[in-house]
Length: 309
Image (cartoon, rainbow, N blue to C red; front, side, top):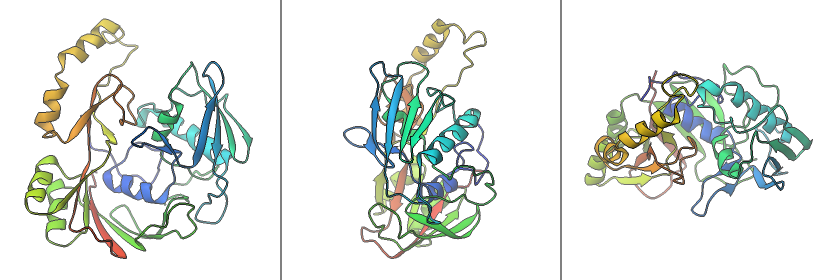
């Protein structure tokens, strides 16, 4: 399953931990998002291929701005995609299908995105391009400027206070402030909600989720964003033999793993590592769970999340 990730403010430096993931999801905008009927637009409003599916025209919103007031441009998006590609080893090579050296900016809100081979699922692949930062951003010791629904007011990797970004182009969030606290133990996160210390606990373990539901707390399932892959070096024996790779896939009872390890709290996903919203072949993915003490929205919320350092 891999070693625990190290906390980082760099949104392109790997998947990070749950504290980072929740904070980044609030501070930064994304290009596309999964939906019930397939990929839905976010910063990217459309993605149109050429005839052989190797060059895609990506149209961006023209009303998105960073929290410092500067507009989000195609140059920012291409810079962010290239930086994520530079961090390929930490990001499972999520941008590997794109030839980002050949990709270009057409105008302020249009991007010409080139793929190495014909590729039909560019919209879905962009779901994993989860963070857009201003072009030229290099210092990530503090959170980089984002264009998401919240902005950072204060804090660090252990605890942070986020305030609503009223200049965000999307639907106004119901919360004016969110306080995020890093709690390493999944059970302790669930206990924080049960005791009233937190309003929401993200990514609690399946056993804690089952107990919380039995105790009357609201359990919310979200689409799978964490994938547990079998990683193989395709240029190294024996994994350079596709028969060996197929044999390993066939030998692993993924349904049993899902039912045993995650108590059924997940789904089998495809070979595309992220996103894991639509099954292509089969690969195990854990579906995150959250415990919520009520259905009404306050104006402030305290969130307990993991900090795997």
